[in-house]
Amino acid sequence: MKWIRPAIVLIIVLTGAITFAAYPAIPDLVPSHWNAAGEVDGMMPKMPGLILLPLLMIGFTALFIVLPRIDPLRDNYRKFQDYYDGFILVFAIFLLAIQIQIILWGLGIPVSPNRVFPVLMGLLFIYLGFLLAHAEPSWFVGIRTPWTMSSYPVWKKTHRLGAKLFMLAGAISLVGVLAGTFAFLFIIVPVIAASLITVVYSFLEFRKEQVKEPKRA
Image (spheres, rainbow, N blue to C red):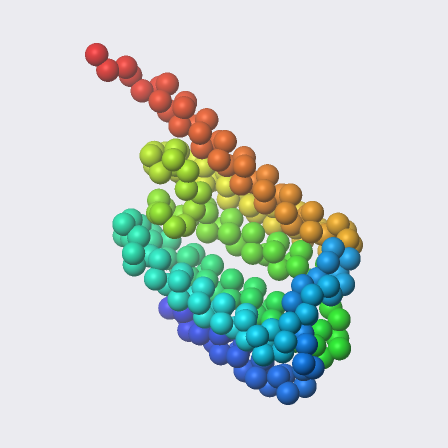
């Protein structure tokens, strides 16, 4: 879809504009870390604290655009390019939302990360599930284990399962908005479980595939 990349640029510009507009009203220190209770327990000087995320957004966007060009399996990206570009857009929006939260805290409007991060991470995981469902073999995108990279059927089976698991992890993360100080567990535990399950599944599927192959004389 041709509108996705202009939208990514728009998000980057919007992030810079919001940061520039808010900068004069922000105090000399801005939050850089929150504890499990949603309380600020780390601060940074205003300049690096507000510039860091916009720079990361630009850096990650550039990296994501370059990766398909240097991947030996670059031709496969064409088969899921829209979903890949969509992930870049979703990730940029994710960073924009975090930047807005930092700015709001700097302006004296404390928005608890225990309310924000479960939603942001949940939506990110859900979209990641859509990306996995359509990803073709590559060295930079997808569930890359020795077994998925060695067998296309194993790649497809593992990614079908991984797509469902990451969407489920996203849904569980969304529920974390109700968990208060335990919100981070609703984010971390499901995604770790999804990752481990897909790795083990890819190994087992590869082993099954090897057993089915006729023995050579």
